[in-house]
Image (cartoon, rainbow, N blue to C red; front, side):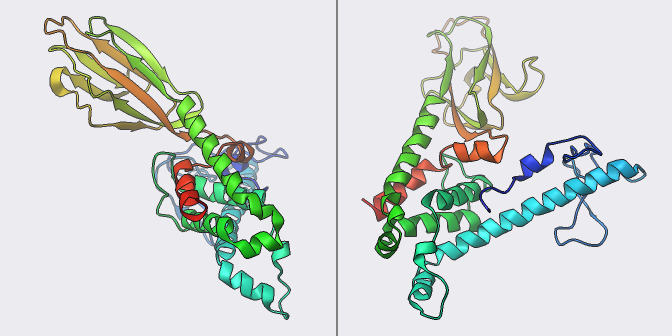
Length: 316
C-alpha cells in the first residue's frame, strides 16, 4: 500500500475546481501553507510558489472547497512519505526482526517479510525525495540512510535468505539496478564543441532528453581567443543568462549544475589570431524527470554508484 500510494506531484494534478478530481494549485505568490499537524489557521508560507490556499480577500466557496480537497490530498501524501520512512527504519532493524521471529509469543515471522521488489521500491521512493543524484553520494537524510541500510542488510542476511528464498538473489537484482542506472547515465551524455582552432560564431542548444538536472563541464583543453565570448542561457531567446566567459576568463576546472534538460550556447569570436583551441562542453544528466510515481519507479535507482559500493562491500 505504501508503494502504491500517490505522490505529491500526482495529487497536484487532476480535475478542475468543483469536479471529481483534485484541482490545480493557486499560483498566488503570497499563498498560505496548511499546518502539517492539522487544525488551526494556516501558517504564512514563504513567497516561493503555489499553495492550495487563495490570497487574502479572495472569496469563492467553490474554489475554497477545491483547495481544501487538494490540501487533504497533499496531507495524505505527506503522511504516506512519513509512513514509508517509518517502514524503512523498521525494516532496517534486522536484528530486532530476527528476535521477533524467534519469539514464540510474537506474531511476526520472516516469511511475511514481503517481496524484494516492494522493499526496493520503498528505498527508491525514499531516496528520490532527498536530492541524491547519480554522481553525488547519498544525501544526508534519515530516509536515504535508512533505505541504504535496509538494502545493505537484505543483501547479506543469510537467515532471511533461508526464510524467504526470494531474497537470496537480491544482490543480483541490485546489481542489475546499478547497471541500468549507469547505462542511463552514460547514454544521456551530450556534447557541443567549436572547431579546433575555433573560428566560427554560433548559437546552439545542448539537450539531455528526460533530465531534470544536468552537470555542465568543460574539456580541460578549452581556451577562448582574446575578444571571444561564450554565454550560456536558460532559454532559446537567450535572455536568461546562466554563465558568461570572455577571453581567458574561462575556467575549465569549474562546473555548473542547471535544473533543466537543456541550455543554449551563444559563442562569438571576432578573430583568433593566436589560434586558440576553442571549447568543448559536456552535459551529464544527474537527475531524471518523472511526472508520476509510476514513472519514478520505472527509473533505475538514483545512486547506482552507491549500489555498486554496497555490493562490493557486502556481496563481493
